[in-house]
View 1 (cartoon, one colour):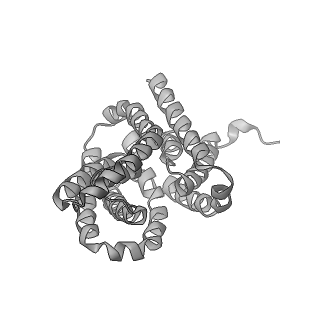
View 2 (cartoon, helix red, strand yellow; view 1 turned 90 degrees about the vertical axis):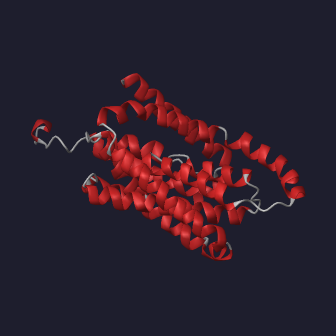
View 3 (spheres, helix red, strand yellow; view 1 turned 180 degrees about the vertical axis):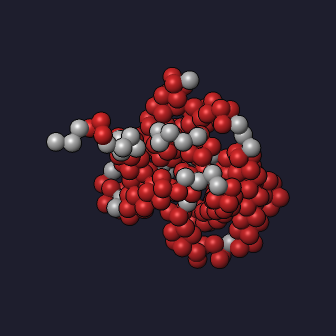
Length: 265
């Protein structure tokens, strides 16, 4: 019989947790969003530095976003006039956010983690009320018949994409809210513009993190592969479980993780 004490120390429950969390993150990202609430703490549990954990998590989850670009390609073509500047805003904001993260001291970022998780969870929690408020406001916007100004949209998008490059959880809903506030009403148009900005913001962050050497590739590749499986297998789940239930689950996970890190500090 092999005694457990002779097994390598790395072969512990942290690997299992990373695998399960990555699978569930893929499922959540595909059907509701918020997968980082699970995958990022799982990366931290692998005993790597906080900045490396965030960089590795960003790289692992990014390929799943590319499928969204393909899904909205027709809507992106129809809105190139605003999609192009929003893509540039995504590149600039994402690059600056990623560079600021790389220059943030490890302990400073670790102390920010519970606050970032709390903020992201709060964003998800306000999804319902804000969406209903935007729906009521839509009639007034339509009556005004004023096309949104591109410069304010560009600056607001760049600010959100800075957050994406730095941490990013919940940023998709932030962009949807920003675009709605600026007068965009068509859901397909809003999602197409959101996908362009978030994909490019995360994409440039992925390049910066990879070149900087902050990505822990064994963990990244495992999470990337398992997350893709989770996203692919979530089609039936998305049809069976109501969206409010899924969003409630995401909020609970985020708040629990935030409380856990506050307690650990």
